[in-house]
Image 1 (cartoon, rainbow, N blue to C red):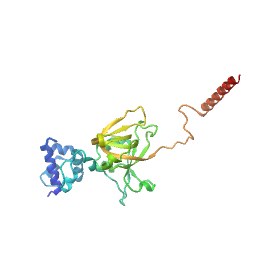
Image 2 (cartoon, helix red, strand yellow):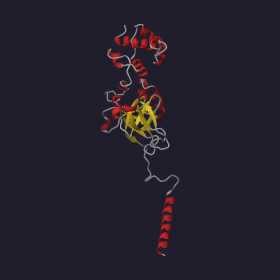
Image 3 (tube, rainbow, N blue to C red):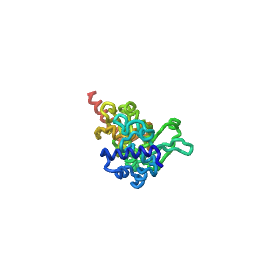
Image 4 (tube, rainbow, N blue to C red):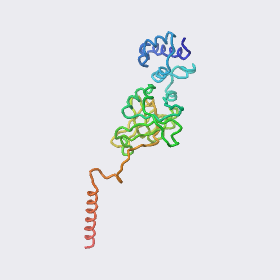
Length: 270
């Protein structure tokens, strides 16, 4: 027999169809990656809906979780409420200690497209850091893609970031700081100007001046991660030489400058 949550789930699905948001119950089922046959059994009260499907319904159709789980409030969230109810999948060890999930470049597109796929997140590599600062809280790391944040960040740098709760986005995202912004389809690293409160968007700026600023609407944002630490590849050279120059080239350049300076001094003495 179906539980109360499943009954409210069915009520929401039928309302989506009634109001024309979805063409049919089957279409709702397909949008949630849920077998139509299983959805049919849920609608008939023969089985309970899985939590993963409920999470997808909440995200996909802006449904109020409080209504689904405890029967309180409106069925759908308005624009001002929806930031507060985004969910985050965590990964823990056998002692229930949270691990840092790493999102490498090849996985970033899939990560952004389907954050509600719990198995996808759990299959990503995880690790811990010895620094006590990373023993509590929720952290995630991301590979840097491309050159848009040069010279601050290089491609293949790894950014260790702390999670910013959606309820804090409007007040907690600090202007001119660097964040990893996960949108519906992409993972980007940008310097941010926060206009969520006034204009419902973020301005995303690159440190590389060849890239233009662009805006992302608050409704498109899935996750916000504040950059805490950069892990870079170690370079063994004592100093970074200008590209294409050797030590001999630089010594010759110094000698040329010295010779020219001597000539100029002699001219002044004449």
